[in-house]
Image (cartoon, rainbow, N blue to C red; front, side):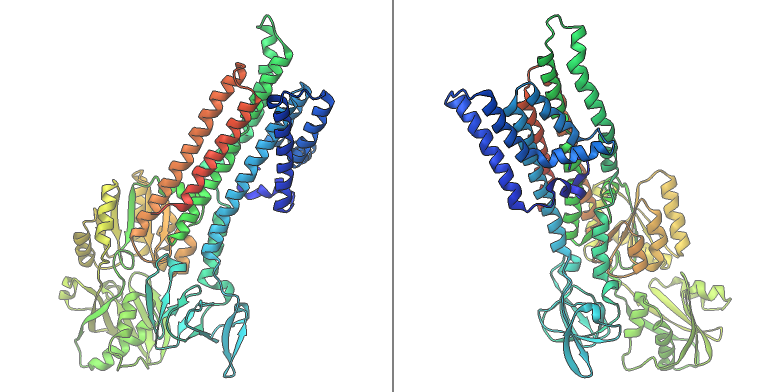
Length: 634
């Protein structure tokens, strides 16, 4: 198992039921303890053949899976692995008459494997129970009749019924006027989240208070929850640099150990006057047993697995152990403004109409074109003046990144966006617009300026303390935004961010992050919009905020934070550092103990009993140290 880490621990289990494995080990343990009790407690001297037969039976009970695997690998030409190592050591012990010690080596090795398997299964079970929350059945309304079916059988645009206390089975839009949902399974936060008609509802949320109707927008396999589960499953396969190093290290380490063991056995012949082959052969066997790399090769991936599980429980998805390493080394955090540091819940403040067009028609045009955008500012405009609907017909909508929207409405060319959009089309507008601090949407009809709408956002309550904590940890903070510079400067002033840039297109954000990378900074970027995907991909660590939102950003990001709370960035950094710290504790512990006992074994001070206890003991301590990550709080 050690060589293949936690992903292949079933090899040693040979698909046997758990109770059968326990019987084998218990019988082997009882035989060994019985022989030791007779020999050392009751001073009974058993015939050598009887002792050999008993020990051989105990040996095969405990070690048959290892022997089979060692033989299988040897036939394939793979001689340098821990299974062959254990086999050679134990057969050698039998060859020199140390039967009990040969059994003990295999028995306690298997006990260690048993503990390792249990720890791995627990880690996998924790993550599976945290995230595998997809309902097995759903109530769908077809032909005005309610019927139960599997979520896989539901099509887009069908209406499903979610009763109070039930989990939502598929992503969709709320058809009921209002309903409260528990989103803890997705975000790690248990506080209720009230949704209103037309709001997005996601699979995994729990309906709290009323029977709700949801219009399905994604198939079962395409739901955000299904994608989250895929991310976690993929995460266990992505190894960190430390894991990859240990894997390579083991491939070199085991052959070197075999060579050193042979040297310990044979070289003293040329330097020791009273050389005894049996004595030095025994020392070589001790050398082989203690050198088994189990503690390293098992506890390290288990540590990263625990880190991924801890993060998942806190609503943070690491797409691999390599990103736990990466985030623990960052020195610069770059953040998008809207939705990351601000609430992203905009409200219309002022509507200024500059021409003969009525305010009602002005708002109708604005609501019509903004109905084609998912940006929070567009949502604010759509919510404004519910008495005015957006009934105009719309054709040929074009989104101009970093500028705004262009569309044909009522056979007229409509532009809605920032001042850069009007500059692009050489449309004149009042110069005082550039002095307005709030976010602004300027409207032009048939290439004529007709007015503007100002929209205000609010900084998240916890954003200030998060930035302060980052500074206390020595992190350099940068804010990037497509908003106008005056808005960005004001937010940066309130939050005390080191550097802030506004009026940015997606390619401008990429440019600023690239400058930080060129300056040898370790950069994490956190953003939530589709336009953030390029810079998320560029940073050392890309973080998708509010990861139940933009699919492109989720797919590109290395870490997905399932709500939009900036303090989760700090939690992710803390989890990365905790995981790295525990992994290195295990590496130092394992190597230190092994070096000490290797020296003692070569010098004839440590025997096989001490070697196996040291090997299994270090492995168990390392495993327990790794497992405790799963129970930590951040």
